[in-house]
Amino acid sequence: MFDTDIVWKRIGYMGPLMGIVFIYLLCRYSASKFGAQAQKPPTPKTEKDPKFGTWKPVHFDYPTITPFPTDPMENKPIPYRPFRAGEYPVTMGIRAMDSDEWIEIDEEYLAYQRIRSHRIQTRGEEVIRVLHDNPGLVSSGAGASIELVHELAEYLSRRFPTMFEIVRHSSSVVSESTGWYGLPPIKSIRVLPVGKSYEIPMHLDDGENAAVRALEIASLMIQEDIVIMVEGTDGRYYFQAGAVLIAGFWRMQDKIGMPLDEIHNSGHVPRYKEKLQTGMGRLFQKLPVDKPVARHNYFFQAVKPPGEGVVSLDPEELAWSETLLGPEDNFKKAHSDQQETRPTYTPSHIRLRTERQTLRRLPRTGAIAFTIRTYLTPVEHLKHEPGVVRRLAGALRGWGQDISEYKGKDAGGGWWDVLMEYLDKCSDEKMQEDQAKLVAAEPQYPF
Ligand code: HEM
Image 1 (cartoon, protein in one colour):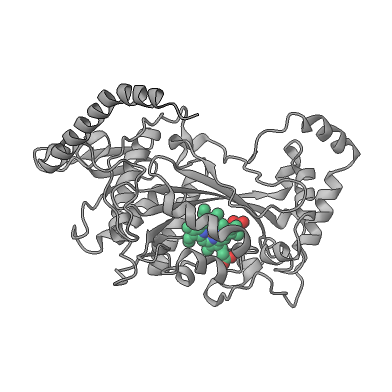
Image 2 (cartoon, protein in one colour):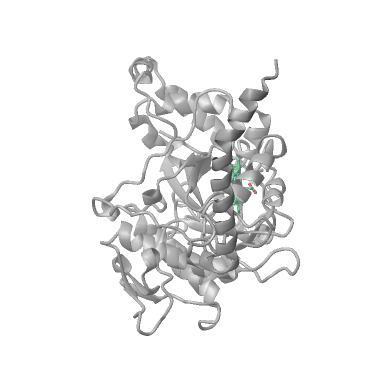
């Protein structure tokens, strides 16, 4: 039954409440109209400008960075083993990343730097490039490149204070306080292990090629490769700047300028359309500035047997997997090519290549900074790691035809058979026993 008494009673209680709400809304309206709004921090950090290809700089409360507890250059490379036995999972595999862990440095720092600086000197814009605006579609990656080098200098000097020393602009000379925590911006950074200092460009017109210089400085400070993705007016993310020095299987010159989908489709990434495209598009559009993420992948590569054209600067073929793919300069997506002569590999020639990739949105330009850290491990070292050899054999048996082709099972003539035989040999009965004990204690992915 409809009880009018109850209705009137309720209206009676709600009357004063509605009055309060009305007065509150009126105050907010007058505040915004007459300028009180200006005192509030800019747009909330998770709110994205609704128009594609535009970005309002957001206020970002930078996290406190914990200094690395020991000398990072005495640190062993982190043994990521991102595989599981069973069917190969095609997923984005994104996990939240702790802000402390953006960049990883280890005992191979100097060896990586030798290779990286040699690549910059010998390959120039093949490995570091910043694209101009593509009018009406997407803006340049230049602003984000400069933002990124400042972000890195802020982070590295806090995370690895034994390796990086900074000097800030004087606040009496530079009025901007664009450094972290409202400090003046960084003027220069000294990389102590290599004894080099770099003046960090402040703006796009700060000397010649300021943005390219910014990426060059960034590359010479860290072991990671860098990609800058900028949102276009069509809502897609474009590869607008990068310092890709040691990608191993792909060349920046073949991908720069492309949107995310084309980058992956042109590389024939298996099941991209069905399993990855939509989720990745959404991730890029929505990634909040305070929620960086990371993902991992793995490949294999072979290196030349000793004495057969080994290049001494990079005998592990970190920068380019020449033994599998042939010369970098003639490369044409040759993952599945069969070689005419089958090299005689042994397990000692085969490397596990893992990547740790991170994604962070830069608060001032809104671009996404994508980093790729590569680790190379001789497969013979894996037998010392509990449970890994057997898990890897199980993972490899789970590659379907498309994954096998993509991961170069037949490239370079014969590494797969050698690897499988080796893994099976190591998984003898005793090892299986040991590993069974370890299953219960298996650490969390990516192990
Ligand atoms: C959430 C972000 C991303 C996901 C989930 C993703 C996913 C993938 C996957 C699944 C592959 C196949 C190899 C593997 O297992 O990793 C791949 C390859 C690749 N990705 Fe991405 N990717 C992401 C971001 C990017 C970005 C920002 C770039 C920009 C350059 C990029 C460039 C490439 C390239 C060049 C390859 C190799 C393609 C080839 O073989 O030619 N990826 N990606």
